[in-house]
Each structure stands twice: as C-alpha cells, then as structure tokens.
Length: 538
Image 1 (tube, rainbow, N blue to C red):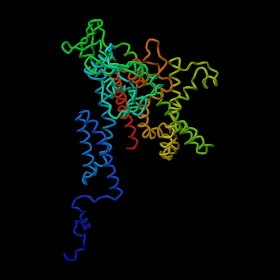
Image 2: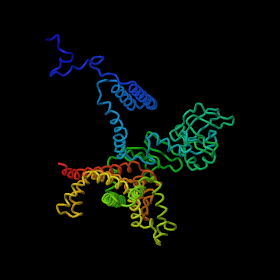
Image 3: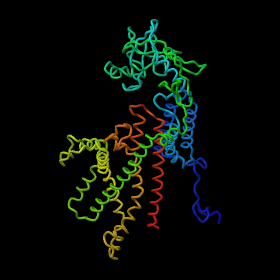
Image 4: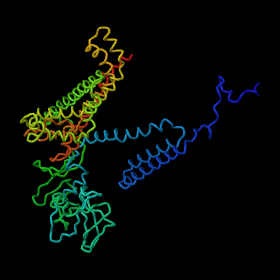
C-alpha cells in the first residue's frame, strides 16, 4: 500500500531517497575550521590585491589594475560559490603557473626582440634627460644644494639617490629619472638630511666605497639643466653642453658643434662620422638578436662551441650518474648479507645530503694547483683550471660525485619494485646473469627511470652552480674573455646579461629562448622515445 511504503523507498530500484540539502540545491557549508581557513585565504587574497593595486594605480598602469581586480574577483567567486568545486582545486595551481611560468616566458620573449641593455633601458625622453644631465657644467650662478648620499629602500646597497636640501630649506630626492619632493625628511640646521622615509642614509665609509657611482650620477632638473655632486656634502645645478632640439630631433654639442641625430631604428643619437652617445632608448629590433648567432662570426663560433660542450656535459653527467648509481644499487640489492650494508648506504648518500654550493667551493679548493688536496695526494703538478680539458674533467668529476647518490636512491627503489620471481624464472630458463639483467631487469627498471633521466639531463643542461662555483666558466682564450672553455649556455647568458663589459639583456633573453627551445625539443623527443618502454606493461 502506498501509505505503508517505508520512507526512502521512493527512489528507483528501491534505493533510499537522498534528503534535501539545506538551502535548496546548494552544497552544505563546511566545518568551522574550513570556514576559518577560507576566510583567512580570502582575506590574504584581498590584502595582496590592495598591496599590488595602489602602486599600479599611482603609475597609471590600468592594465595591471584590471588584471589584479579580475584575478581577485575570480578567487572570491570560486571560493564563495558552492557550485565551482573543481575550480577550487584548479585555480591556485593555474594562477601560480601563469605567474611563475607563462608570464616570465612571455616577458623573456618580448625582451629578446628589443635592444634592452645598458644605455638602452628607458624611453627616448628619459634618454634625452640623462644625456643633458650627464653633460652639466658648473657656472658662477649655479644653485648649490646640501647633499646627503642615500640608497633607496632599507639596504645600503640599493639604488643610489641624492637627498638634496635647497637654499630655501625644501628637501628633494633625486635620481637618474629626476627630482621629487621629499616629505617627512629630518633636516638639520646645516641642511643635512639625517633620515627620510623610504631611504637609507649612507655613512661616509659606504659612500666612499660608491664614490665612482656618486660622481657619475646626474639628476635631471629641467630642460638643459641637471644636478651633480661636488664631493659628498654639496651638489650644484648647472647647464648641459649637450642640448636637445625637437625641431631636428637631434642633440648638439655646444663645445664641439657636433650634431647627433636620432636613429629610431637603433635607439641612439648618432653623428655623421658614426660616433654615438652612450645613452639611448629601448626600441624593438625584431629578430636582430637571434640573427647575431648566425651573422657574427665570433658569436657564432662561441655559441656553437658552448652548445657542443653543453650537450656533452649534460649527457655525460646523466650517463655517468646513472651508471654509477645503478651499479652501487645493484651491488647492495643483490648482496643482502653484505657486511656494513646500512653504513655503506649512508656513506653513499652523504654527498646528496650536503649543501651543493658548499661542496662546489670545497672541490674548487681541492683542485687548486698550488695547495689543492688532489695534487698533493696524487703527487701531481696539474693546473686543473688552467687548461680546457682538465677544467672540463674537473667539472664533470664534481658534478658526478654530487649527482650519483640521487640516482642510487631512485635505482634502489625501482629495483625493489621488480618481482624477484621474474629474474629467477629467467635464470631457470637458462639465461645468464647478464642476460637476465639486460632482458628482464633493465627494461622494467627503465620504465621508472627514463623520465628521471630526461629530467636529470634537462637539469644539468642548465646547471649554473656546477660551472660558476667551480671554474666560473674558465679558462678563457686571450681573444675572447666572454666565452670560456667550461661555459654552459646559462653561464654564458649570465655573463652577457650582468658582465662587467655592460649588460645586454635583449641578447641574453634571445639566448635564453634558444636554451628553452633546445631543452624542450630534447625532452619531448626523449620522453616520446622512452614511452615505448611502457610496452612491457601491456
């Protein structure tokens, strides 16, 4: 009878009916701890958004403001909604992927097609201001300022800034971009600024250490004027000898009469004889940075030589750490009653437990030709870092010593997952030890090890520490101090971007794109080839 049907029997197949959820079709609210965690996370997202949006708003970066608002709105929608359950798990990872992977790659690509470098950092207007300010000369009627040397931020090594006190007592902060009022500064009766919000006043010892930087800093203060230091306590405002004329889009040197015309393709002011002013501006150069690898014979030979050694270094390290790690793992795996087995495993893993940067520096001293441990123990007189091949051998030895314990751990775990019955069955069928290993153990082992070998190759292809902390890329030929015998592409890129001869960010970004493409292609090909190993499971 319908009146005697038990509750819950109304569902098809006799399954009990689901009771209605509170609030209609919405999911029930979580526990108090979950609610607190969600509120804390949303509060953190709102705080980060407020921290990011105000500087963007002050700079007039409306695209950045829109992106921050959109991302914050998405986070609030996903975590306040009771329907977007999968998105609650996908959104954090996606945002981190975009922030730390996609955006840096896109920025590197955009930089690689520009002339971004020392002297080509800002806009054309900023370049004109810097050119005029750098040529300032003092005149009898120059305005004098009381100078306090400071650094931007809370660290004394930050960007150099002039804290200036005008004759009327007003305070300013000046850098290569110009003057800004300095509210909240603490000024002594003599005009010295002892403290200012956002800046660190440098003591005399630190200011003296940056004397060349102080002498070279010119603060644009107006059309054709600038402020330069006169010692560490005074500065003056003078007129520049290089003046810009918008009519001809050129800069004229008042002392020599030479005219430098703007070259918008190269982002520089160039004279008729080919001379150019050191300050320029950032412009797009298309594929010029990539073409340098093919058109410049010096760069082409250096790049191809470094690329060849880079591949050999990554492949050799990967092969050697795999062979050495696997041999040690097999030895301990097959000899279960080996005396001192646990202690030996600890000793093998010891290099992996040490900080790698400290070990590289330690090995560097061990290879020293005068008092190094290796030469003294072996009775050698080898200049390990003075010849290309001995330096390369030293780098490989150090990297293999630090890398094989990781491969030993992975191989040990993979060997323990292979059933011993398979090897025993092969031995019963007449296979020798080597045949059983090659036909049974190794194929099963490579299913787990192949992706790790690909990752190891990719890691060592960009193993900056192994080379920089050991040889710094040397030894260098006398005719090319930028490309060393042990340089990897990553250390070569670093030297270009931050070398003493001047930073070339655009060219270094182009080289980084090449590295990215090379590693990507090799990794994809290797992973596709290793996928055939999975046939053993089918």
